[in-house]
Image 1 (cartoon, rainbow, N blue to C red):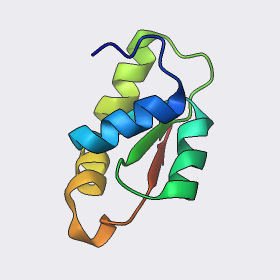
Image 2: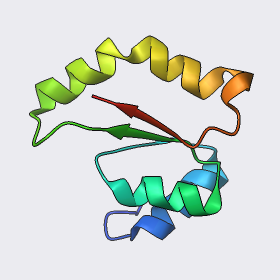
Image 3: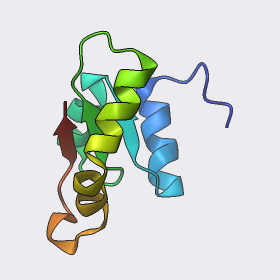
Image 4: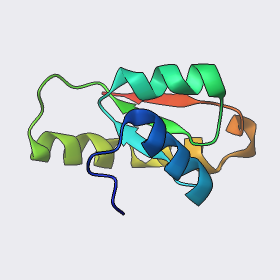
Length: 84
């Protein structure tokens, strides 16, 4: 996608135009969502220095919550889902 060197604002703009959500460890995306709203929605993984396996387990454990957050009309204006 050519975003390897992009800053957070550029990544957020790309996600917004493509109707993507952002999964991140970075609080900056949460703060940008607070400033500018949705889209994109942000899934904020709150794990300290996790291994890839721990990230995958966290996402797998929370998959139904994530799907609900992304697809439920009741959460259309919700900016961030924090998982750990």
